[in-house]
Structure formats: structure tokens, C-alpha cells
Amino acid sequence: MSWQQRIHVATGLSCGQIVLHLLVLAVLIIGWLSGALVPVALGICILYVATLLAMLFLQFHRDGERWRDTVDLLEELTTAWYVAVMLIMLWLLSHVLHSHLLLAIVGLVTLTGPVIMSLFIKEKKVNTVSAQPR
Image (tube, rainbow, N blue to C red):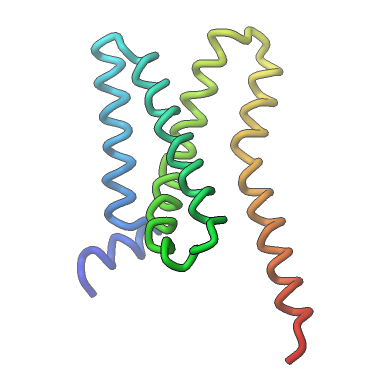
């Protein structure tokens, strides 16, 4: 077993995803140390939204099979960035919202929302597959 496979088995992440997490963390630390954390955080959020929209557009495009590799790469990027971007968003919202209850509700919805949606989508796929005649 190669070292990349050992890392993937131990962490559940590919080496590319780990490097991406570390890169986002390094950019945030550099932004914080230089005093430009707000523009850096907003840039990362905008980049995440653009990547997410591109992934959704290509996923529902007519020639979905032709773009499958690109969609998989974009999905890996959005998955890797999601938690970091949501934490940045909560930090930015904490400067506007001063209610801890509202921040907790927004944090709970943003962090658990995609998990719940993913479960519903997988459940629908399981039901449609099991309903097909054999």
C-alpha cells in the first residue's frame, strides 16, 4: 500500500483535499496576520459560491456524462471548503448580528442543512432503485 493510500485510509481524505484544507487555513492565517481578514474571508466565500454554482450548472447540464470529471473535481472542492466557509460566514455575521441565539440557529442550519439534504437525496435514490422491477 502506498503512502497516499495509507493517508486516505487513516484520514478519509485524499492528499489533494488535505492540501486544499491547509491552503485555505494558510490563506486565512496570512489574512489575519496582515489585517485583511475580512476581504480574504469574503473572497473565499465568493470563490466557494462560484464553484458551487458551476458545479450545479454542470451537474444538471444536458451533456452530464461529458462533464463528469469536472463535476467530480468541483464537488470535491466544495466539500473541502464547506465547513471553512460556513465558519467564516458565522464570524462575519457575528459582526452584524449581536444575538447569540440567532447566531446559534444560523450555525446549526448552515452546518446541518447539507447533511440533511444529502440524506433526503440518498433516500430518494434508494427508494427509486428499489422500486424498479428486477
